[in-house]
Image 1 (tube, helix red, strand yellow):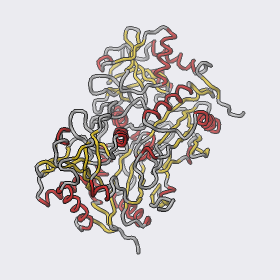
Image 2 (image 1 turned 60 degrees about the horizontal axis):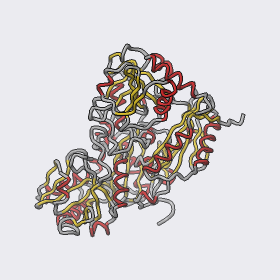
Image 3 (image 1 turned 45 degrees about the horizontal axis):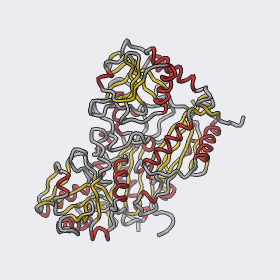
Length: 300
Length: 300
């Protein structure tokens, strides 16, 4: 691995190496975390479900009253360029829309000029493939609950990870790698950057409320439809986690990640469940499926 | 007002004009809002309660397991320098400790090298003095509740302002300038960057739980002690806001800010209450009191 991190960013009109990519310290995207963002993967030189990610980004902007300074076509061009210039065939491609830098003395966020930043870095694995082959160790966080939707809307993808980071420290302290957070009312929500699926009697279930409407989550639901696996989006009680045959986590940063151990005990029969493995394989097959992909023009 | 914003920042070992102050886009202080910060005021060329702000910053770091890369003495020197170099006699002086930029592929936040950023900009008024003279228009947010302490600890000063920004939009939409957020269980918490005080039968009350332990809030409690005004820190039911004689808000960015109108109706007799006015006057007197101040050496 080289010293300088790989990647390319677009910052206020310029394409820069990621190591030089900086944002103004006074951007309210930093000092108020007032922003939304999205991450799309590039796999084998192709964007995966780019339209779905950009649709969600636009919905998020609308919900928190951000206006991207760039049109959809301009944004697509910027994303194509950061990937192409990075040369990365497998990339994690982030677009951030911030409220922007207020003029001195201005406090009304309706008057700020919103900004767009974007970058491509090497594909991020929340859990690496070799870990996914054996399944991960996860805990149900007991020291923190998920921020409620009445406080911060989790369907608007955001960087306000205070609860997730707290949960992550707890997971590490307990010898695990990821936490699953509850809503404090006995229901499962999500983990840091991951949606949660449970498998019971051969059927999938994933929480409906208090979670990001993940594109990988949607892809798993689409795969379930195609493979004829029953799937339900609704309330998932915390107790279900302890009575399930399989658990897996989903994210653009890692795909479908089986959970082998919960709170120090094996999930179901232990190891990676057969349904999790089947869905995971299909998920990666779809990354080469023209229904969901768009090639990046690397100019080579 | 000049075009270039005034101020000076310290970024990774260099002092820079605020307009050039930038942070790496990959700092988890941005992409995970994983940080704590504090703001101390400089008034008439003197820091106000600097030790209390730095104590709180250190407590915050400890609670979220951040280690500042700078000693207390080094931090004090940096803050003195950003103020002196800015030339500002009235300044808003911010110190941020972030989790830092992970090395590629690293996900364990325990291993990141934490960073410190600092800057001085002109003193920030959440409500300007001329508005404070007549009192502000405030609403009780009905569209959002404050993030619960079980999700994100509000005593660790943070930038995760999703609930506050949502409330701020609601306030503006309803013809007001600031929202007060409830905890969703019938209790008052705080507003964006402000603690809340109510006055009933000549006594002060301010919420104990689900709020920042503001230095200005503490200063008001200290003033109450000195002036012999009874004061209580405890549960403040939302209903108390509508039965109170006076309401005021407190912040390092503006001091003691009387509320004249709540949800479109006058608070108490309307205008600025006598106790609010008295506390506000004492608050500013204390900015010249050697018990609480430390002069900046501007080298002139």
